[in-house]
Image (cartoon, rainbow, N blue to C red; front, side):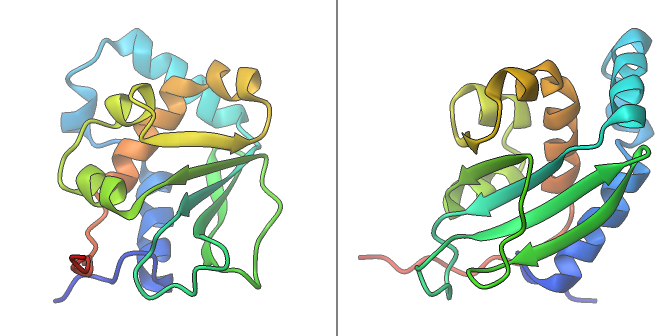
Length: 157
């Protein structure tokens, strides 16, 4: 079975399933139980949305970045879809990342370093509120990075 294309509707559906399931047991084994208690507490009450953008998605029209829109509610993802220039959703937090950095995340680059080294940036939203749940976000980013996807080769200039 082939992998869904990155930023496709099929990939977004797989992301929703993966986020709802949460980190795997092997991922959880590397951290203290109290860390996961905090994660679960944040997840249970999380009601924000994210628009995770890809600034230079190959094949895009360049007018606006494509985004993975994720709405949380009641401890689960209630909406997850890829949006384009004509279908932008209002999101609590808008974040942006370059295509190469998305690919690196999927190739195993550390999600905490992705945030810490500013590979993904909060472009809109209350940054102080966002960072109150940063461990929740980075664990979700790790889950997203493990959802299989096929990437297009970038053109070399």
